[in-house]
Image (cartoon, rainbow, N blue to C red; front, side, top):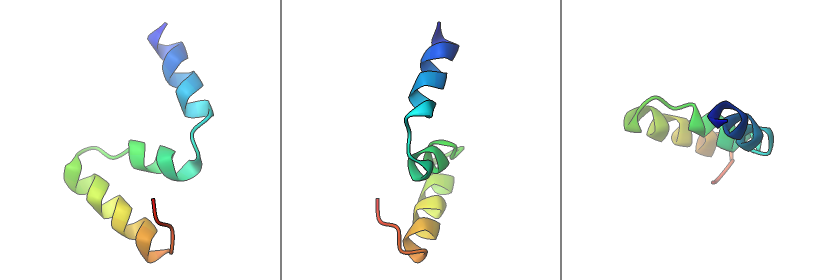
Length: 43
């Protein structure tokens, strides 16, 4: 059941949220946020 829930949640995520959710740790998340901000995408 948890695989279905994960799939359903990922289905409705926008691409930027999905990209951020794939971060492995806090440092990786911050780097991904900075990358998006440099591209002009503010979340």
